[in-house]
Every structure is written in C-alpha cells, then in structure tokens.
Length: 191
Image 1 (cartoon, helix red, strand yellow):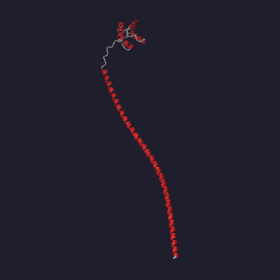
Image 2 (tube, rainbow, N blue to C red):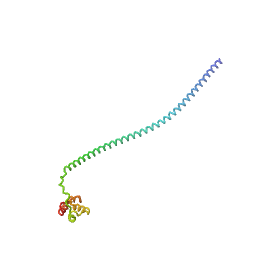
Image 3 (cartoon, rainbow, N blue to C red):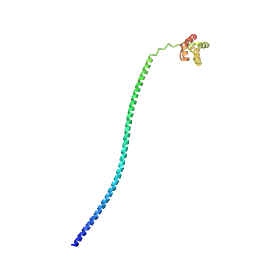
Image 4 (cartoon, one colour):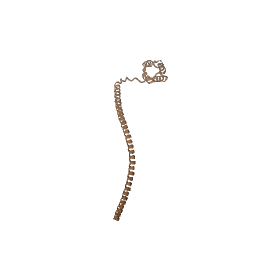
C-alpha cells in the first residue's frame, strides 16, 4: 500500500509539476501580454499627448481665424458704409452739376434771346489822309495820353490809309473813347 501511495503521490507530484509549468508558462505569457499592454499604453499616452498638442494648436488657429473673420466682417461693414456715403455724395454732386448745367443753359438761352440788334455797319475806309494832318489830330485828341508809341503809330497808320475813325480806334486801342472819336472826326472827318 505504501508503494501505491508513493506512486499515487509521485503521480500527483508529476501532475502538480505539470500544472506549475503550465502556470509559469501562462504567467510568462500573461507577463509578456502585460508588458505589451504597458508598451502599447505608453505609446497611446504619448500619442494622446501629441494629439492634445495638435488640438491645442488647432484651437489656437481656430481662435485666430475667428478673430480675423470678425475683423474682416467689421472692415466689410465699414467699407459698405463708406460706399453708401460716397454713393450719396456722388448723387448729390451729380444733382448739383445737373442743376448748374440747367442754370447755364437757361442763362445762355436768355443771353441768346437778348442779343442786341447789330448797328448799321460803318463804312470801313475812305480816301487816304495827309500824314501831317493825321499826326496833328492824334496829338491834339483827348484820351490818348496813356497810349504807348506803338499804339499811336498804329492809329496814325490806320487813319492815314483812310480808315474810318471808329474802326481805326477799335483796331489800335481795342475800344472807342467817345471824346477821342469826336475830336478826330472834327479834325479829319468820319472816313
């Protein structure tokens, strides 16, 4: 019975040793799985840290873009308002311009309607006059004291060539002084 007992104990020991080996193998396998899990966990934690950094960067970029968008909207509103102001100013200026054009056209029409009748044309020239008589008449005529020498010479030449007094004064002086014209007509005649 002792031999049976021994054989039974040896068989039990052998079975226990086999279970211990199995348990150690299972423990080694579980340890390896645990190490792999820890390594994967560390990798996931590292990836999580990277993702958090990316999320923070993206959030900062999003906030900056929102600020830019808000500033862009404000600028667009300001420009729209300015555009409306300019459109009003242009419309007012165009209305003023059109009113001024109408006034100018009315004034031109009124001026054209009020053109005085043209006087009978004066004779333009008569016979030539003696130069000493013309020179004496121009020296004695009032209103020519301020005329320069070239203007006087032109008047004398016009009168010597037989020009009528009024056209000669207009040609030489650009205007007709009635006292000067009367004196020259008395001295030389009209034409």
